[in-house]
Length: 417
Image 1 (cartoon, one colour):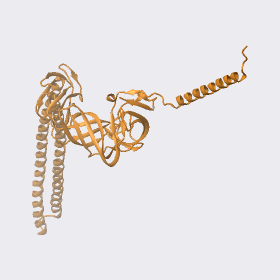
Image 2: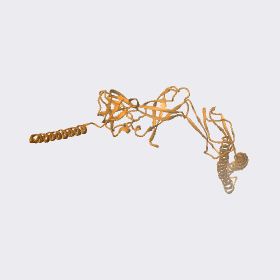
Image 3: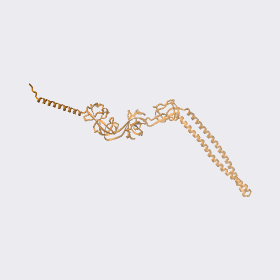
Image 4: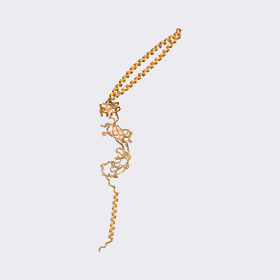
């Protein structure tokens, strides 16, 4: 008969208790270890990202904008009078001179008006000639009267002097002497009056002829205006260059001021660049610029900055200082770069996709092995076209990812392969 031993049962309980404690400790250890593990980092293909190294040195600040080549000398040719387009002799693209006939307009009413005014001028000139003859005749009559009075005065004066001698000798009565003397004095006064009449008549003649001449001048000016308007129906280029635009067609009716054509000098071009308003604040007149025509680079200088903002851009004119490449022509699309300043001894890096001047951004920095990248915060300063100043967060030779990493915004670490 077997007898149960108490120590065996007790030992089994102790052993089970120890196993339980070990199991609990193992579970706790695994849990703590798992909690301390970093989350799995996503893998990014290194060939699909753009990596750049932080440098220290000089950075040339630039701004870039798209634009077009436009002529410096543009002549818009308006219609000077109303008319209908009868003929078009030159088409856009043709080289023209000042006297090149471009368009012929037709206006019968204007032609009739020119003839009417011409006849009015001729009539006014005939009236002027007739008036001059009439006034000259009146002047001669006035002079004849004055001459007759002068002769009578001279005769009366001689008679008065003779009677005076006779009166002194007692051969003539006092009454006869005084009558002769009074007559001479009367004729003297009439002579003065006739001389004044002649002077007034001369002034009157001059005034009447001047008035008639003014009428002639007025009609001649009107005739010249109408004649010029008639001549302007033959529209000429007015400048040497190339006919860029023709705004009318045969049979079209045009009014005064209507733009008919545009002539430009293709050898004198400038670039009009559209610069983002946020980047245009540091642009100054005289700064160097380069214009890429896709067929060569042209150097230039900023000549004008538009004070107004249009659709988020500022228009900047660049006068070209080097020879134009072949194919450069008005309205050609170009890419312009303006040099703002050269920053000396600064920390800079390639410009991240979302890196704006004077901003703070999150960016991935590669570790020493180059196989992993960690998100860090970087403070940026002044920017250029392809580079930007680093103020805080990076050191020389640090490598950062400049590509668009918005797809990995939820991760603080990525792996590169």
